[in-house]
Amino acid sequence: MPFQVTHRGAGYRFADLTTLLAKATPLRSGDVLAGVAADSALERAVAQRLLAQVPLTDFIEHPLIAPERDEVSDYLLASHDRAAFAPISAFTVGDLRDFLLAGTTTSQVLADLTLGLLPEMVAAVSKLMRNQDLIAVARKRHVVTAMRSTLGLPGRFATRIQPNHPSDDVAGILASTIDGLLLGAGDAVIGVNPATDGVAPIVRISNVLAELIDRHQIPTQSCVLSHVTHTIEAINRGAPVDLVFQSIGGSQGLNRSFGLDIALLDEAHAAGRSLARGTVGDNVMYFETGQGAALSASAHHGVDQQTMEARAYGLARRYRPLLVNTVVGFIGPEYLYDGKQIIRAGLEDHFCGKLLGLPMGVDVCYTNHAEADSDDMDTLLTLLGVAGVNYVMGVPGTDDVMLGYQSTSYHDAVYLREVLGLRWAPEFEAWLESAGIIRDGVLTGAMPQGLLAVEG
Image (tube, rainbow, N blue to C red; front, side, top):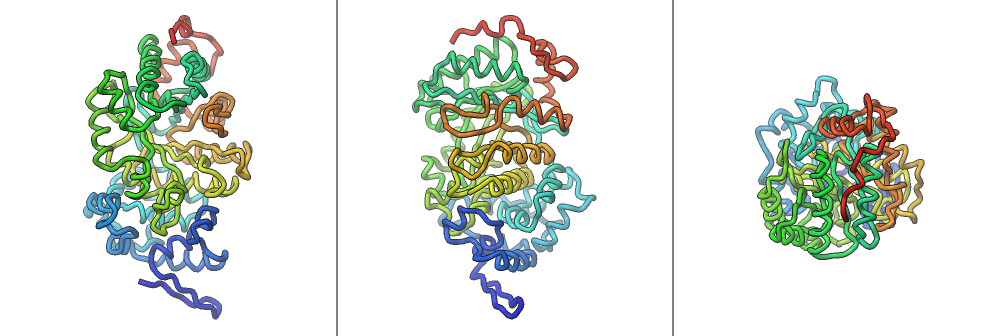
């Protein structure tokens, strides 16, 4: 199904919907590396003009990746809610953009539409939007989840404490965690990326964090970010697992490279829910994604990296996760070259995830060999705060000494709350007040009695 047009005497032809989407995508190094990017700004503008005229039904009738050979495609099409789609079934991609930006399209309207949207539709409309459009629409969509804290409420903003340690030293993990708590961080999750593989680190770290949370009655949840097979085994061994983590992608091939499929994710979800460790909710999954992962695994099927990312979000919503975040600048400059591309990708990912009904967070980050710096990250963090991001990372001093990249610090979250008037998750805010860490919403600098009395 080719798309073609003549512009200023020159003919432009795009072989199919996959090609048109890729050519319409704002410039990023990953698509250039894959050989799917537009050859010029003019070709990109022409592709965007044609994309605006594409009926939304084309994404149903012409799947980018055939469901017969990709279980993610099969799931996305099988789960598509035709009743929810009905109000916009006559729309083109351009019509959808106008609809999303209309003042009459409220958070509830967007919530009702959620299951009628395929990820490819959402990715397509994002390609027609300026940054301010992505912010304005995402800000309308509130996605609320809960486990021991309630996340995503309007006017609220949460953080993940990321207390990684290069040797998984428990004392070091606890020191970084307490540092974060004293700065008001941690209402999303205390999440540790273990430096060592296997089941043992999950059991050991989960037990230590559970002791900290239980002793001080902190309304948050912990997570050790390991492969689901290890987490399932840790659950079988009696570990106090709050959240089950996994990196996921938008194609069967990418997920196979991660050592998983939908059946394994279903098993992990069931294992997490079986523990019933939540107090105010039962959302138990935590997913991470990132533009470029499918290309790095040679599992992108010629689809541009931003559309592949949106497909991962479509899979994630099968499991009603507590948390999803795009680790937007982590994969490196091969996929997002500089601060401009990282900022754009972060806003796109947040927009697409929110429209698909996900509790989106963003790891506002970059690797040290990217053409980006902390000023770029300050800009993205502020824009995401305006856009209503559910949570970001909290890393001591912004520098993750185990993973070797730059993210956001506990102090960055303090800044965002102050300038935008954002509050914590309600249960966590009440705990901070009762512990004396904040008073009337302001950090006191006080050390709660006994907070350091946790054995590692």
